[in-house]
Image (cartoon, rainbow, N blue to C red; front, top):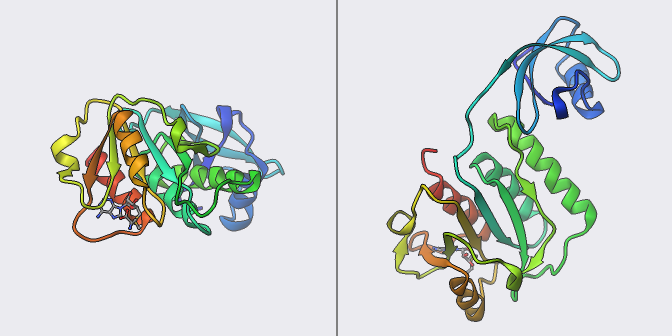
Length: 226
Ligand code: SAM
């Protein structure tokens, strides 16, 4: 079997059904095959003992990988049209976000998110954590109105035309909150409100990026090399 990482809450010795199905039906696992199991806090080398369902495994050796940025990285992301948030959640997880907080903003076309979509975004975060070797699956929260964004220790607000660059204002030793607007951008009063809560406007270059691209560019700059 090729190398594989499976999410298994509590490293309980039993794989969730979906994970087990993937192991057996796609990867054609056999009893005795080795793979990696992980949850939010631990990772271990494991061996298949029963193909189930459910697949059962035994732990051979625990490992402590370090894949986190080292500080809280919260992404405040405006609700976007269609399935664009899926792309954001996937990339943000790979880039080290610890929490993703969707926002209802003045110019967001969707003004709410259904339970089903939230569940799907959370599943995407689990998949992306697995793929990128992270132990921590970022929280994906239900949307809140932009006015409910709390005061932050350090915040960066992606705003076309802003004077400062990320590297000029970021303190990498502090937790950071990042805010990215919807397709139509933030309204001026929203920019003012976020500034009052501790966010500094930053530019991501001279070109106007799609909101999804902007979120990932901002995250990459804020977590660079970590
Ligand atoms: N006309 C809108 C405006 O001026 O804000 C464009 C919105 S853009 C498609 C969507 C979001 O991506 C923006 O609200 C901003 O957060 C971010 N963004 C896009 N390009 C950017 C850039 N060059 N610098 C900083 N932020 C950018």
